[in-house]
Image (cartoon, rainbow, N blue to C red; front, side):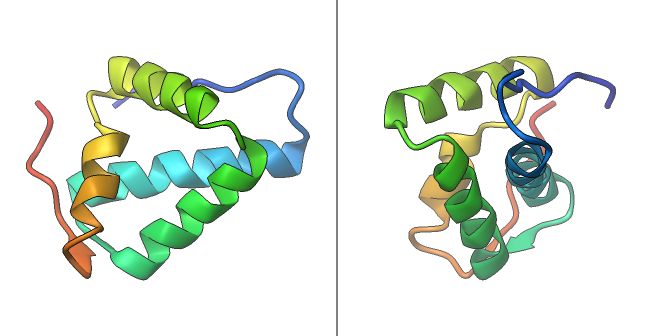
Length: 90
């Protein structure tokens, strides 16, 4: 897929990389599957950059709009599974 990640211009390069890593983890959950530990580490780093839940939700929704991948559904799946493989979003 070819789309732009929802990012904030005030983030440092390091912060941007952490957020992109989280988006990549969500993509991986749909495209090939991901271990819970890898997903949760990416989410932990994302949460360090985007601390407010409302901002996290806003970015996750924007990401879903451009990618079709639902970060919330992936994170919910991680509550009950050690390996997350989502059904294709298309």
